[in-house]
Each structure stands twice: as C-alpha cells, then as structure tokens.
Image (cartoon, rainbow, N blue to C red; front, side, top):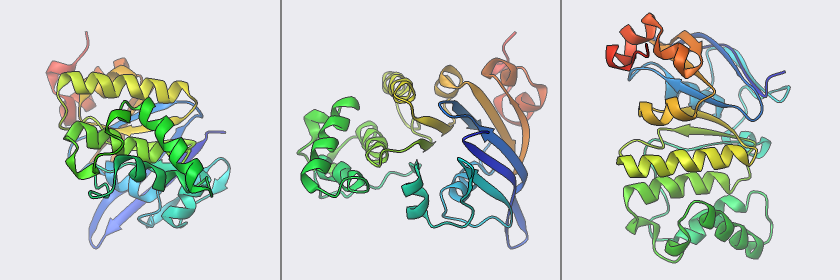
Length: 241
C-alpha cells in the first residue's frame, strides 16, 4: 500500500475544471516530483491534499485512512505538512520562535519546542540567524525558514511548493542538498518545482500535469524524453538523448 494515494481527484471552480480525474501514489520514503506549466493544477492538488480545498470528486488516502475533507490542522497532526510558494513568516518574531511555533504541535513544553527549533535551525543552516526578526531574512533564508517550520511539525510527509523558485544556482544547490538530507532522515517528499535542475536531480519519479490532467509519469530520464511532456512543458532543450 502506498503511503499517500490520490484517487480520481477532480476539482471544479464554477465552470473551470482545475483537475480532471487525477490519480497517483507515493511510497513511504520516496521523493516524487510534480511538474507542469503554470495553471496545470499542481498547487490545487497540494491544496486538496493538505485540506485547504475540498475535491469535487475523488478521495485522498494517507497510510490507509481516508483524509478527504479533514481540516488542515487535522491533516498536519496525521503527519502531512506543506510549504507555500509565497513564504509568510511572522516577520517581527525571531527566527527561533517562528520555528518553535511549529514544534508546539508535538511538544507541549515551550522549552522543549525551543530546543527542537534550535536543532532544526542547525540542520537548515539558519542557526546563526536564530535571534534576528524573520522579516529581515533574504529570500533564500526565508525559503529555508519556511522549510524549517514545516519540519518542526515532525512530519511523515512534506509537500514542498517551489522551494527553489527565485534562488541563484548556489542557493539551489544548498536546497537540493537539504532535500536529500531530509529524505535520508526518513521523511517522504512530494515536490512541486519549476527549477528543472532541482526536480530532475533529486526525484525518484516525476508526475507531469497539463491542463489539470496527468499526462506522464516515470523516472526523470523517462519523463524528459516523453514527447508529450516536451511539447506541453519542457521544450526540446530538456530532452535527454
């Protein structure tokens, strides 16, 4: 049984079908990439899995439990946490306290939450910034803080929405290294990304959406050679001979 099963998900907004009968599965410990052009339905799918949207049809199963329709906090308590494209930390609060807020989900003791926050900031290389206001961080640092806050909930699975967007090549390399470490620590990763260097270098499999439909699935090498994917999204320069 897959850890996460997306079963025939359809989502309609008035007369628009943002997702059309999408199904996929993610195994425990896997890193699955999700790519596609703008408007393909990637973030809509994340919003349904994380409880922000109700599907018009279909269901979401996590570790054998139907979580369709649960509220975001209930889904987070079950072990699924997500990041957002536009990061919004508590700007006047210190970096350490931003992370400790997430840690309070599992730690009733504020002291223990702060301790866990410090440990995670060391992992994500933000420990030197722990006492500065989150609003003073650079974009790359805010992205790392968003990821750290998600990790603080002690997730079984992370849904990461464009964690490398807007970063320079060196910063992207740092994020790739961090994703590999998180996965090594046993967290399943489901990653939406437009930065092909990031998604193709870390994913076990890649699912491709276009106009709300799944058009391809396979290893990064297989997907990059799929003519449907090249036409719909990648372009010929991404084709691997």
